[in-house]
Length: 464
Image 1 (tube, rainbow, N blue to C red):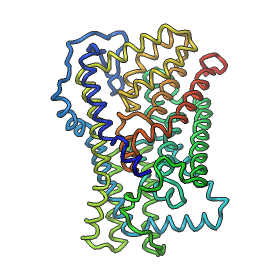
Image 2: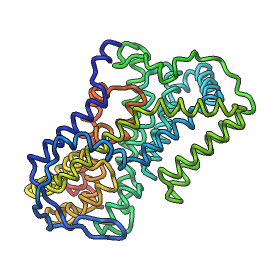
Image 3: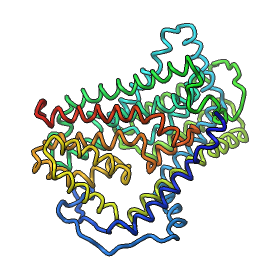
Image 4: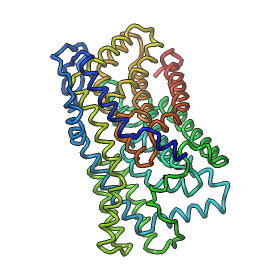
């Protein structure tokens, strides 16, 4: 098993190869642009304005310039990862997290029938987060908890990241109320009132969430019976710094720290939904949590600093991967090929019947997601084209939004241009090709389910 992992391409190699591919594409794909206009403070594409522009093919030198520009573009996310990693390391140094997990594990051992409900309960919570406030980057925080939790229950790191990543991903893809995807897409498509059609999307959310839970639980039960079925094994001990797990007492100080931790998680949700908190505020919240934990836990200044540095070092490779992933998009943008791809694909969709067109919109959005991983960014670029096109094809605008929502949300789980996706895999020490092979079957099932759910309104069996 260890030999297999050593032969797997490093994530940095994979992302660098894709970066080189995009540099080559800037020499092949014609350069072009759409005009853009400010609509309610957001720059959106103006349909029918595509025009060719002077090409700007990226040379060999761009391969070495782009990474730093990627770091510049992703500076907030990179800083977030390093700061939160350091803060969590301080939290771990107090023993509060390990003591809490040991309590959960003891409870699960005494109540074996309840152990199986831990995964679905957590995944439902994360799915609600994805469905309501678009949980995405926040998953980078939670996997620091769910990986050791999964390992303590006898599962591997794949289960550890799947609980928040697939959980939030299913909620994000089937969201009834996500303001950053559904809200923006409906606003651009001039659909009122905002979040209208939530009844059908709530049904979609339920189907997606149940599907994700069943898949993760099936895999967890499978490797519980046969650990050899895990494609990565149980060797990722470096995540825990190679330390032996000691029995820890959940004393008063640790209970207070855990209460602060859960209060911080509640703060994430409240801040994101009510006060528009994002990376900067969330990072500040966890730095505050780290400092408070060190004081309450009785850590010395030296212990606190060493723990923070170690936690940041552990996530350094994840930060590098995020920067390189952003560099790919920098090259595509500089080479002016994104709008050309968008224009070509939108034209191809226009030749189909209403049902096929709606399905093609879904695949189209999934493909565009490779170039534009941001949900809100993708809505701003594609919906000004898809909305009027759906009118011409006799596809409701609500269905066009649904196709966008599926294409954006589902493919976030696998695209290597997403800094969050690649960062999560790097933190968990899961090679990208291993993850892709593991999740491929589930992705095919979800694509089929998505096409069925799109076909219902597209065929007139459900009227928005």
